[in-house]
Length: 483
Image (cartoon, rainbow, N blue to C red; front, side, top):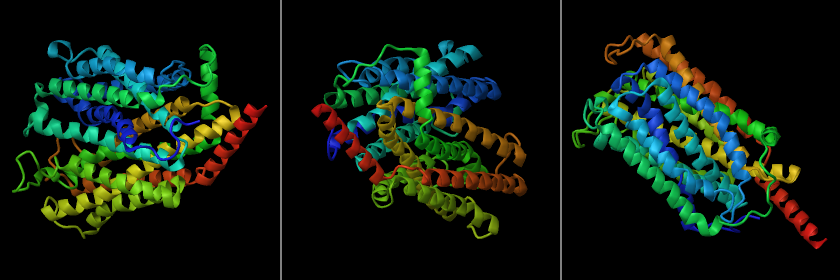
């Protein structure tokens, strides 16, 4: 039985979603600043830092299912998830500050950096996996689950975008601000405080609703049993279909984000675009996080109506196709010679219009996929008699993290194939190099987008099937109580 029957109160939606700010802070730091900070500012070899990032990700991907399993089996008067949300954020903040303020102000050893990154990733998983696993427990309503993920994605994106804006304007401002080491410790400290406030605030705000002793007491922990249950959960047909589509969608997202700076500089030359009416820090390039924020607000407005009208699988399919078309349209028009002068206000405004809508539908894909997992929980429970929210959502994280790494790998291959030289001037770069980069990006985006549309569109649990399953399970429980 879910904690809340019927429509969720607005307060719960806001406070549950607020917890995802911590994930957004991490993503903003890892995706946009960490590699640059350790290589360009602290002087570590960029290839070594990239290898450490990959190694920490692989360790974390292995640990995530264990965290999910342990979260499923936590048995306290505060329920299964809240103890994790109370215990993890303070240590997470400590290691996050250390990541941006290494002892002595110098780059740590490779092993030291690896240890800090692993600690950050594991502790963040200890916050995020239990938090998202609360969704199927809070409500079994098909639509309300989407609503909770809608607020989580909005909060997560806004947390990451806030850190990007503050980095450019407060902590590392100016033309060469990103090269100044002094701003990074404050960037890390503010992010750590935000992580703690978001995670603890969300847990405290939900405490009265979700703090209940679980209905059944789990058996003692067994490592072999843990991996057996994880394997069984990951073998669920609906999860495998989700994983195939989610993998393609997450790889595409990882590639798009990691290549965005290359495209924004070498294709659209946004750093050359200035606004006479704007403050000095705002130009075509630094406006990018603001554009992303607008797109996420748009997502927040359309994903609910889409799920109501089309259902989650079809919404994911439609969004994937639309995102491909809108995301690649500017590049097709540019190559065909039908685009305004590059680095002009009209070029920038038109490009950002396409970005707003393409990213809006791209995030709808992610929300649809995440919300689908909640329905897998009941399918698994009906088949096995056990609930495994933590295992399934940790599986989602495993897919997402591996895919993000593959997306960054694809970006590296695209840049290598295009033969773009290090430090090349965007204005004087050979147009053939830019064309090659665009074509490779377009091919990869199209293939990945179509794979995501195909598999997520085939997800086998519809709203009607979900509601029928809930009715069967409720009837079975009533019959069991009667006997």
